[in-house]
Image (tube, rainbow, N blue to C red; front, side, top):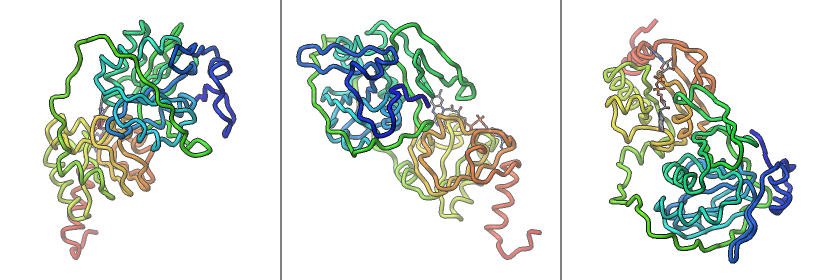
Length: 342
Ligand SMILES: Cc1cc2nc3c(=O)[nH]c(=O)nc-3n(C[C@H](O)[C@H](O)[C@H](O)COP(=O)(O)OP(=O)(O)OC[C@H]3O[C@@H](n4cnc5c(N)ncnc54)[C@H](O)[C@@H]3O)c2cc1C
């Protein structure tokens, strides 16, 4: 990934005058009561001290400088590992109000990067519109004059160039983030100007995750159901095998959209975030939206007819075979262990 700061590891983030601005990214002139931000800045929405998936990656991609907005931002700042310079603003999470309050103070920040989390995707287009600049959504990497963005469900990487400032969202789970030297950066609290009254998204209810999602998030072993399984019968067979292996069942969006499993089984950037020791993927292509929710499994096995798919590329063991046939074979061996399976 491009380190736009050009700083050696361990170097302190310089002030806005020398920082990414050195690569042509101007920072803000300090407004009265507000800090001078560098020309490349991560912007992360926090809810009740919880950072969204991809927060540290976004901060690392922005060279270590981040503005946290939302609720419980000071607590969330302590959880960041990649930050070298942190500002916090307690400001609620309503996206239109946030965009209206933030835009005037961020006009001179050349490149704003938000994680492609639900709140990041809500805020980014509103902020881009308020600032009158393009939004490069779903980036895998931020470049000096644009971004490499994922398209076609992550199958294609497209380089987009823009002439001037822009806003981007960064897909989580792709770049990783090294901890910044020297431990967590001490946050500086700022107060956002009150936004003008504006029509906004409203939170009607916050639903607790179902028991299935909770246990999936904590599962040490997960069998993943993908579209390549072909139908609900194969998914049910996968569930039987998961029971026998004391594993949980997760799925891709293709499977949950098809109704073969409930949406609380969906793993990914818009589903449950997991971090198992073992992930066995059956007929899963390995799209970034899915792998972005996988955490860092110690062992990955991929069963897929395509030996070159991303899921198999990231696996320790790739089994190039029909997933249904492998499941049937596994079921026989697990359910009748004493029979002759030769
Ligand atoms: C905004 C947005 C958010 C998204 N969020 C998520 C998310 O949170 N989670 C998520 O999972 N997806 C999400 N998606 C969808 C995601 O981009 C992919 O489309 C999805 O993950 C693909 O699922 P899949 O791998 O099961 O299906 P496919 O892409 O259809 O892949 C099927 C795989 O099965 C293999 N296969 C085919 N037949 C067989 C067989 N007989 N045996 C073995 N293998 C076989 C194929 O080679 C292929 O690799 C999101 C998309 C968007 C646009």
